[in-house]
Image (cartoon, rainbow, N blue to C red; front, side, top):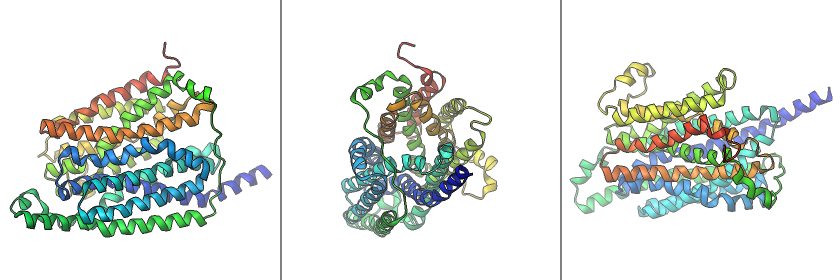
Length: 439
C-alpha cells in the first residue's frame, strides 16, 4: 500500500517539473527551427551566396561540438537546475546580440549571436535531457521523452509561422528583380529597413528567456544528483564498443540530413517560386510530428526499433532521389494527397524535401538505445559523444550550399543526402549488432 502511495506521490510531484522542462523543450525547438526561415531572410538582407547563407547552420550547430565538454564541466559544478537557468541566460544574451547585428546589417555579428544561442542550447540540452529521465519512474521515462520530442518538433511548426507573420510579411519589394532596379543608395536603405525588422522580435525573445530563467530559479524543480566521473581506464575503453562509435557516425549523418530537410527548404522553395517560402520549415516539422505520433503507437507494439530505422533509411533514400528528379512546376502530388488540408500548395520537388521530415523522425530515438546498449558505466561518456554528433547539422547544410554554388543547381545538390542514408541503413542492418571490431 505504501509503495503504491509513494509511486502516486512521485507521479504527482513530477507534473510541475514536466511542465517547466516541457516549456524548455519548446523553447529550444523554437530557436533551433527558426533557422530555416532565418536563412533565406539573411540571404536577402545581407546579400549572401548559398554557401554563405548556410554559415547560419554552421555557426549554430558547431557550438554543440565546441562547447559540449566545457558546458558539461560547468554543469557538474552548478547542478541541473542552475544549469538550465544558465543556459536560458546565455540564450538571452545571444538574442540581444541580434539587435546590434540587425541595426548594423553585419552578417559576422549575426553568426556570433547564433553561436552564443547554440552555446546556451548546449547546456540546456545537456541538463534537461537527463533531468526528464530522472524526475519520474524509470519505467515511464520513454513516455516523458516522447512528450518532450513532440514539444520540440511542435515548436518547429510554430516558429516559421511566427517568423513569417512578424518578419516576412510584405516581401514583394525585396525581390531580386526589384532590388536590381534600385540605385546603390536606395538599395542599401531598403536592405537596412529589412534587417531592422529583427530588432523587436529578438528583444521580445530575450525578455521571454529572462522571465523563463527567473521561473526556473524560483520554481520547485527538485535537484538530481549528477553522475560521478568515470574512471580514466573506462573512458579509454569506449573505442572497444563499435555499436557506439558507428552510432555516433550514424547520428552525425542523421542530424546532417535532418537539418538539410528543415533548414534548406525555405531557400530552395524561394528559388522554386514558392511565395510562402518562410513557412516551409513548418511543413517539414509537421511531417516529423506526424511520424513521431505514429512511432509512439507502433513501436515496439508492431515493429521493432531496428525495423523502424531500416524503413526510415530506405524512405530517406527514395525521397532523396525524388527530390533530385522531381518537378518544380507540378503540384500534382500535393493536390492528390493534401489538397483537403487547405494549406497552401507547394511544388512536388519541395514537397519531397518536406516529406523527408517523416523519414527522419524515428531515426534519433532509434539510434540512441542501439548506440548505448551494453555500455554500462560508460553510458554518460557515450551520451556526450552522441550529443557532439549534432555537429552534423553544422557540416552538411554548409556542404550542400557549397555544392549548390559550384554546380549552379540547388536541386541536384541534394545528392549529398544519399551517402548519409546509406550509412544509416548499414547501421540499422549490421552496425548496431557489432560487439567488437573483428566481427
